Picture (cartoon, rainbow, N blue to C red):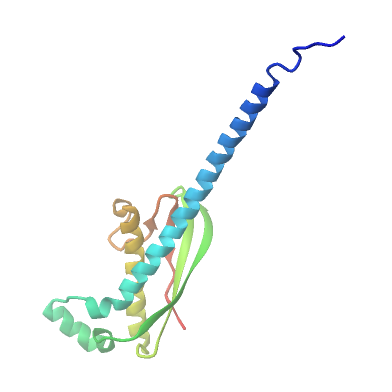
Length: 168
């Protein structure tokens, strides 16, 4: 016995399964791509902020008394110097339940032949890290979520902290 109408509806069901699979796949990819975009944009903002921090001594405006004190204690930092950003590394520290975001630690590697004293390097490193975090905060508009030192700083999917600047 042969039924002529036994394949009716089969094409419609297969089409619906195919469309459903495509929608689910698109949703999964969207979430993954959004997190990768978030991380990539954060790294670019960090590099921009670190560069601003490197140039901070040349571009800063100080009150006269503050400048004189800074000049006495950190004289090399008040003159143009050649500090070079070598690289920026990120370390995924896993999910942080305090902030409901993935925690990322950022570490900047810099080199300089003119900044030799430990105190000067510490001061410069603090300035680099501050500007790095501030740049991430400004990029994502999350300054309302952090303190005045932008520590920690936030993006849409991650929370960022900075390690001490590594001098190479």
